[in-house]
Each structure stands twice: as structure tokens, then as C-alpha cells.
Amino acid sequence: MKITKAVIPAAGLGTRVLPATKAMPKEMLPIVDKPAIQYIVEEAVSAGITDILIITNRGKGVIEDHFDRSQELEETLEKANKTLQLDSIKDIHKLANIQFIRQIETKGLGHAVSKARTFVGDDPFLVLYGDDVILGDIPASKELIDAYGTFGKGVIGIKPVSEEAIKKYSSMKIEKIKDNIYKCTDMVEKPQTKEEMFSLYSILGRVVLPPEIFDILDHTAPGAGGEIQLTDAMKELAQNVGMTAVEFSGTRYDMGNKLGILQANIDVGLTHPETADGLKEYIKELAAKL
Image 1 (cartoon, rainbow, N blue to C red):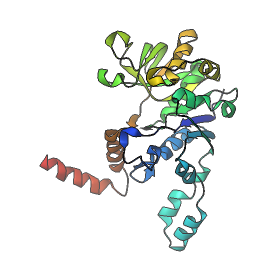
Image 2 (image 1 turned 90 degrees about the horizontal axis):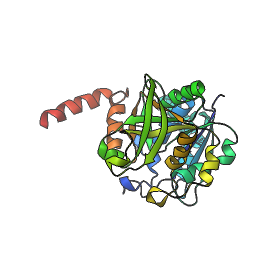
Image 3 (image 1 turned 180 degrees about the vertical axis):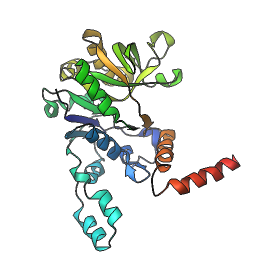
Image 4 (image 1 turned 120 degrees about the vertical axis):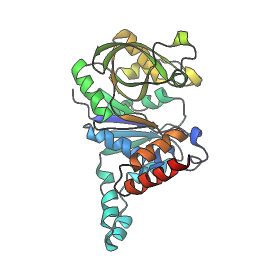
């Protein structure tokens, strides 16, 4: 079945990057000249997604504004013959059919995804975590969607992380099928000891889920942090029917982390036509002083 629907949970408070996120959603933090969430939406669209539900909460109306048309701004730029700037904004509202819903209470990622039940219906769907921008030659979402088409099971996007970092994420029990494709039969959220860890592979920002996940979420009890964890629901799915894991080829940037934000801006800045040359020279000059 072709996957055309995506859900982007974007209701987090962004506490790790305060005070920047006191009044600005972390999803709107810029990577050079585009907000992080636009990169995420563009990735989904490039993977064949046509309908997107973004889950927000209070104070994040600016995300909706960004994906709306700004006719006054377009007219101003057109009159000023600012063609490049006009081209950069005029089609943002046409990227996909984008809808919004609020997560009134921030009870965890699993709870946020459960709000998408009506939007998803009986279709498999893509989830792109609002914290994670993934950049590469092949969209990570496409790699996962292709794996779903091949194996017909839920898919998780994984990468290896350090032993210290995995305590903040999740640990996967996996068995290699071929190349970058694995079978996943178990997982644990935020393991704190080596005994709890299955491997150093963790889910980083992308999953494809069957609609059955909603029935599982209905009875998933609060887990780590007292929140309803999507990992706990996927654990049941993995144990009962199995899931496919894809080690995606792109680079993942954690936009809820100060270092991740800096890394994303440097890497994109080094390839952006308006900043590449100047940034390279600046880095060379800076490196000589370090």
C-alpha cells in the first residue's frame, strides 16, 4: 500500500534550548534561512507524502502561520523586485495538504500520536519527530517507506549512539537481514543500565506505523518520565508481529539540543550558495586560533 499520510508531533516545550524557546517554538529555530520544521515537511513531501498532520500545543500558532500564504509579503517582495526572496516563500503553503491539531496536555509522544487516529484512518502512516532534522542524498522517510513496501511491517529508523546517549533515547533488539536492513523484535525506552540495553542502536526521529498502533496506544500505560511513550507501544508491536529497522543513510540533527542546532547550521551553511564561501573562510581563520 502506498503511504501518503504523515504525522509530525511538534508539541514539545523545548526546555533543553531555553531561553530561545520561551516564546519561539523549537521547530521554528532556523537552519541558516529555513525553520527546522520546513526541512522536515520537505523531506516528507520528497518521499511521496501528500497529507500531513502537525500536532502542536498552545503558543505554537507561528508554525501554522509559516505554512499559510502571506499575500502582503509576496506583493511587497514582488514590487521591490526581490525575486529570490519571493521564490523562497511563495510556494511554502503548497508543499502538502497540511492540517493542525493541538495536544492539550503534553503527556508524551505516544499520546501525541494517538491524536492522529481520525486523520490516519485505516492507513499506514509516517511519523517524523519534530525534534529531528535528517539531511542526506536520499530522504530518510523514503528509505523507511520503501522498507515498508518490501516487508509489510512497521519500520523504525535507527542509528548507533553512544552508551551514554542511549540512556536518553531507546535501545533496539535487532538482527541483520541485509545491508542496512534489520529485523526488530524488542526495544526499551531510556535504558539506564547495560543489562537493560539490547544494543547501541536507537530510534532517531522516523518511523512508519500500521494503523493497529492506535489500539495498542489505547492501553499503553505511562512509562519513562510518567509519559505515554510511543516506544512502549511499538515494543508490543515488535514482540507480537515484528518490525523492520532501517539504518538510514542521512545525518540526523537534534534540534532540541544546543550542539545539534549549531552542527546543523554549520553543515548547511557550508553548502548554502549564499553562505558557503564566507563560512569556509571564517572557519579556517577560526581554526588557526584554536
